[in-house]
Amino acid sequence: MAAPEEQDLTQEQTEKLLQFQDLTGIESMEQCRLALEQHNWNMEAAVQDRLNEQEGVPSVFNPPPSRPLQVNTADHRIYSYVVSRPQPRGLLGWGYYLIMLPFRFTYYTILDIFRYALNDAKRELRFLLVYLHGDDHQDSDEFCRNTLCAPEVVSLINSRMLFWACSTNKPEGYRVYILGGCCCPTQEERNQTQVLRQQQDEAYLASLRADQEKERKKREERERKRRKEEEVQQQKLAEERRRQNLQEEKEKKLECLPPEPSPDDPESVKIIFKLPNDTRVERRFHFSQSLTVIHDFLFSLKESPEKFQIEANFPRRVLPCVPSEEWPTPPTLQEAGLGHTEVLFVQDLTDE
Image (cartoon, rainbow, N blue to C red; front, side):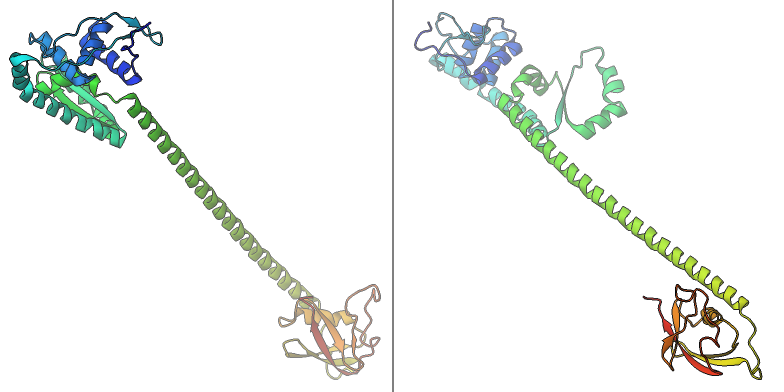
């Protein structure tokens, strides 16, 4: 069992421990955890102190006494133990701490510049492309000229991501090269970014569906108007054809009419027609002619309606001018009882 003061690592501490091991190359997980706990799990301070040790500068912290290792069954790569973070001791420790203070300020200022670009990328939800240029590498110049400056690469960078570049020979470039992993977003930030992108995707899809629905309704409205216009146009064409056929039929009826008898003909009948528009038309017919001749004469007139019936006043009756069940063959004027002079009324039946 673990000692009472020992405790397991949190998820955030586990991520920091793995990142610290990757950055420093320390194989011992115990040593990585000791270094992080000495700096109160401050990743940047722990890495900085590790770099100072590699450069021959002694650490400002005294190493704590070793403790037995306790394997965490949740992850066998992690070892659990507890140490306290000691403060600088003695005149030498505090003197070195004060001497390194300006350098620490410069270090954090450099990282803040890089974080500005990183925060902009997070805020705009764009990738941050970091290019660290090695002046001493034999392929650096060719890579910059032929690859990095290629129009396709430049267009891709300008349209989809932010770009941050620095030479590894410069302090800020070297620090970012060493501590690049420390500036990566945490798991919580990645989860928030993923949720935000998912919400944006859902909003985009909803907007897209709304636009598609609007476009569908517009197409349906345009199709409805087109069909309506075609229907109206077809109705106009049908009406024109009907009028044309009607006019041709009127002309045929007029050509087939028998000649008008002379006023001196004792067998002639003078008929005055009163049309629905109060127009009066006069013509002579022969007693022996069928009432159909009267109907054809009125039908050929421009002023007459398309459908009509002819009525006599004394006695008031409708003359059978067209064949029917009662009168398969219309009678003659004489058989209909018309006199030498008659006034007949034309009744419009077009709307009936």
